[in-house]
Image (cartoon, rainbow, N blue to C red):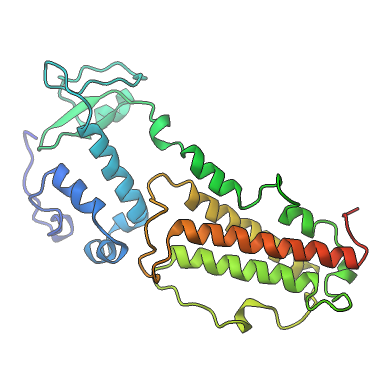
Amino acid sequence: MKFSRDATEPAFVPREFIAGKDVRTLATEVLAMDDEAFRTVFKKSPIQRAKLAGLQRNARAHEFYCRLPSTDSGQPSLTMRPQTEVSVESAISPGACRKAGVILYHNCGDACRRLPRMTMADETAPAPWRTIVASSLDWHEAHATFDDAVAGLKPELRGRRPEHFPHSAWELLEHIRRAQSDLLAFMRDAGYSAPKWPDDYWPSEPAPADSRAWDESIAAVRRDRAEIKTIATDSTLDLMDKIPWGAGQTYLRTILLAADHTAYHVGQLIAVRRMLDAWPAA
């Protein structure tokens, strides 16, 4: 920039990880980062709000841009439909770029170039197989769903254990919730610590404290299920990667384990309801 000066205020001085590197080098190093390195490099930085996955998503976008085939002029050949026509050669500030409705991209050196905003649907939409993996958490093609199994059960039956059966509907519901929550925490939390088996995976009483406890448990199952679906469809995450703080488990294995575990106990929930003459739901 014509009137730019090096920053002297400590708060604005580039961190050692960033200083003196071009964008391609930074993108490559960001993509090689793990969670521990990310937290160390960007300690007390607003960048942490984007999380490593968000930063790596931007790095992959840059890599995609650098791989676009070049035209005779040396500029990338844009095969995606622009929403706003803009001359690539014209110099423009980031603020003006935003007003013009375009995205500012960095070249692999120090120069900036102005490019049209592009539709990246094919790049950001989850692959069909990811959608299938996510749908396995609550699909209804093979059997009744979790939502079917807990719907419309009368409060007086929620804590009743059928004769010759070890669990009540409440115990099975809470076990599903706790196990699924544990698997989600395992995938999300670098500081994960496994609960104690079996004490922490089952409620201490066969009946819920009240209807609110029953409803909150169901809501938590649905909320955590949605979070696991988000992981499954995150195109920036290789589901075959091993969870860094695990013992060899991959994200895909953990997602499938959550689906399989819930399905097993949904079957038990329905069996309990049958023995209590409470299936199907009214």
